[in-house]
Length: 171
Image 1 (cartoon, helix red, strand yellow):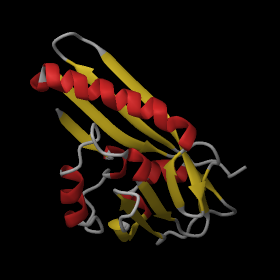
Image 2 (cartoon, one colour; image 1 turned 90 degrees about the horizontal axis):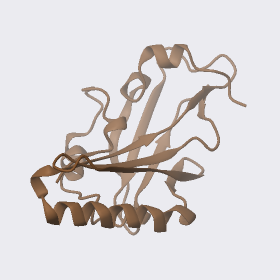
Image 3 (tube, helix red, strand yellow; image 1 turned 90 degrees about the vertical axis):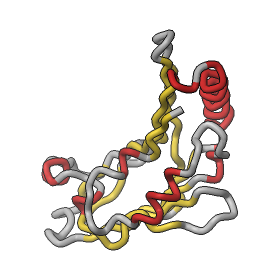
Image 4 (cartoon, helix red, strand yellow; image 1 turned 180 degrees about the horizontal axis):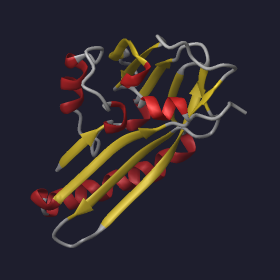
């Protein structure tokens, strides 16, 4: 099965993206990984935040031979700057992973999947400074360390300039 891991975060070929973390992500199988241990540490600059309740892990799997598709959006709970799958969503996520594993076993070449993150940013006050920087870390296992994905990169490393410009105010 071919899986695009955390594609929503890898929007740019920015020099702030840490290649070794991207390579580690390529070794992760979302169909077998315990996504309960996954977490994202998002260090945002002053003037920007995430709208409460909008952070989600998106997981989808398709089969080209049968045309079947299943997907789910799973709540990411926030504690400080860290986001992780909400405990109440884990059983549904694990069921979708089981479907993906079964499809892969039946026909690996016809199975495709994607795993991504969806966040809705918002502005605080006048918003971020023009030279605002952001860092993103990923933890791939409950007892693992956070690996840097974006290290002190421009805000454009995680969001297009137009999106930043058109953001609404935080509630």
